[in-house]
Length: 473
Image 1: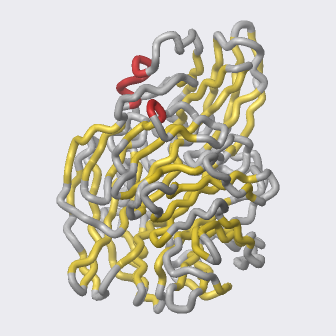
Image 2 (image 1 turned 45 degrees about the vertical axis):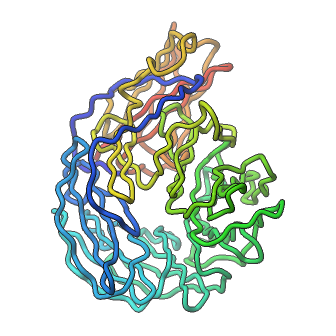
Image 3 (image 1 turned 30 degrees about the vertical axis):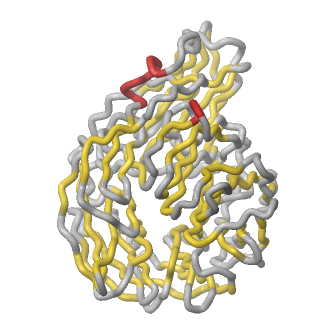
């Protein structure tokens, strides 16, 4: 999530609490567009500080992409389809590949891949057509040279390949490895703790059985031999594999979730917890097994939808929805644990109120009601006179966080990004009746974080309180 200009932002001080969750649906339908898409991604395409989204789909023997520019109120201006001469686009990726501060679009298919460079208005110019046959891909700086690279799952050669970017929209082949399934989703993440600087690669796939194929990054654009973590208890997944990551048990290490099509009585989604050394625990039934029913998986995401400081899990499928995370690696998929029965696709703050709204792959625009509900949406007896205040918020260079009326003696505050990765830990400068924390917008390794939304989390005794921070350029 990026904000490239100062925008009107209402939630300057937002305290949140660990409480029992309500059974109310947190999303409400506010708009609808007649689209059915193969992929959808959000970004600020016209540099106005509002998150837009782009979709890709196909009609008969032709594919197209279309950009929807945000009006800031959960409505969008459609720019019209741009057609491509290929049968089917499987994935749409957005990033600034030529480093001109404008978001670009990369489309992947089984035939070729197309890179369109953005001009900062929401329009794009075709830059290059690459002879890559990719089913899925992901973006990150895998050789640590400051330029975005591309990792792709190649369906024809049964390989995963690394294409190194030069910051001008060009790529060269660097690394290639055989893998074992044609219907796999790949992602990049830092799995070796807060100080890790080399991106690792993981793929949700079917090697011998369903599971996670993990490649450890070397930092030079290549990866070590893979390790396969296979789901036990005889559960099998079929096609449409998707994966996501986040610090699901809040120990400072990235965990993995994968999902695939399963039988009606079998779980489709599994959690692999990082053992704080880059290795992962195999999920055992019924722990860390979620979402039942024979449905076609479209998306999987770990995001904090109810703004309680814990990552939740959202499944995009014919029968999907979002379940509440509790910060210990567990999710509640029944009763009050359901946050939403709306299948998830892509999340962005469409109405600029500080919570993540939802755009579905079938055209539905859903507004998150968490901010409107506030503490009134929680069960009685769960709210205490706690206060966590951030100023200035939004901020550009530094922010001061003040904690008052906190039981016990807070030692530090942790700063997290939207994936749940801890970026910094702040020590308190205590004064009478309150504790003061200063954050300069940098990670613990001294790197300045990008514009976007971050969470400050304070733990004191059995109490956890969070505040949402918005960093601007």
